[in-house]
Length: 153
Image 1: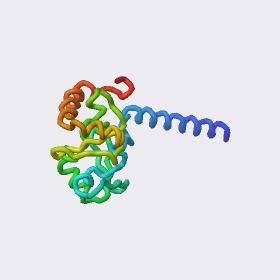
Image 2: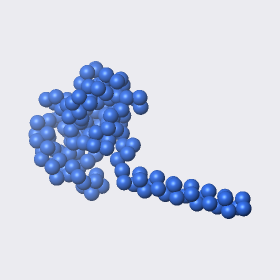
Image 3: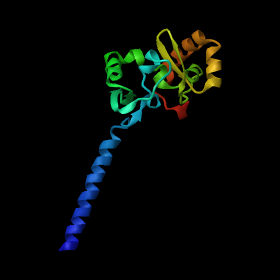
Image 4: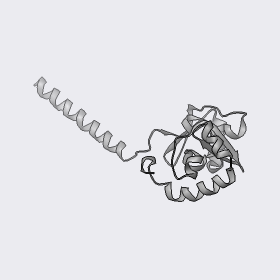
């Protein structure tokens, strides 16, 4: 009798776990943290960007953003588009050449009130040589590459 109870308990556990896995498979963006956990508002309000924390979070388009304070979170929630990095947070120079490179949140520029992240300081140098031209090209490319996986570019 104890063996039967153990088998039934194990079967119930397996079915419960399978159900949770199926539910998670339908929401692939769960646990995606934007801007490597940096507080997006801090790019605009502090001398240098600050890391956010798990106490103050907001989710936009399936991406979780972390904030250093509740005030920063509220500021972001009032106008997310003001703070979100361009090109989905990918490297701005990469977007200008039709690629999606992971950006370093410490390598950035704010141009005309918009946040542009780049891969590293060397790439930022290439970006900085013609920022208006790179933005124009990246904006045009983004229309084509936004929905593609980085490996497909």
